[in-house]
Image (cartoon, rainbow, N blue to C red; front, side):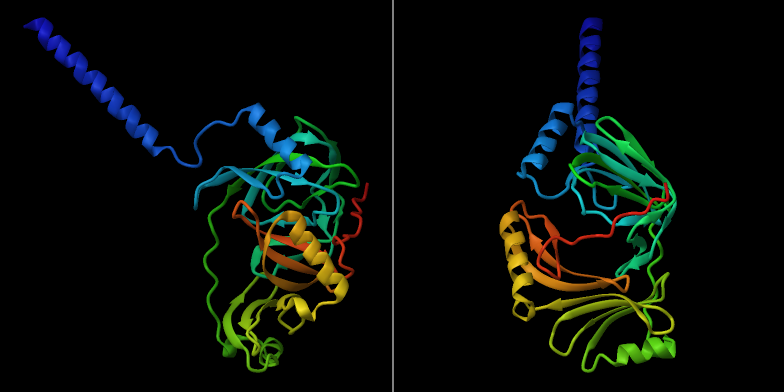
Length: 303
């Protein structure tokens, strides 16, 4: 009888352990798991060969506290940038390049629809280091940084740690706007206003024009437009830009969704082609006014 009791207890304990293990396994989500060096090397090789075109998530969950991805960096691809609510860590998987951390962004402007993301043409000051495979870079929130590749390419794992999301900006009415801002909004004759919010740089406006096109811009309190994105038709573009967009879309094997004309920093103008890649991911293909890749000014790092 005692043996039977102990056998029964043992079976119950084993069953309980199995149930707990199964429950724990069921709780695993996109932030849990393993990625081997071989897997990372394989992704790096696909980036270098062109088989992969866009950044890939390694570990991510909707509204998770962090996410881990792997991305490919090539010359002329990056602005100087600064994230107000995100800490970043980078592990170089392959390739080499110069990375600048710290200093000050030149001609810094908040992105039109996300005031917590700030971009600039270059960085003055800060520390620039040539990085290679195995190097790690830490970028606390609020720190300007830039991957500045004059030549070559690199692949890096990026870890993004999210801070508490900022409180949603209160929706404004026309009566809440300074006179200069209000006059600029009213100048959009026949437009339907979708959103008006206060931003760190001034005011963010989203609307649909009388012609049915999406348009968004950031305006300073005096009514000066700091950044603007306007949906445009392919037929309205110059032959060179049309050819450049079509070539970029074809090279990526993507499906074109829409095209935005982008005006930033008073002097930087280009086109963003919103596309869907073969794997279903959405991205933007950037084309300059001449139909070629966007050429960013060289960074002056004050070294």
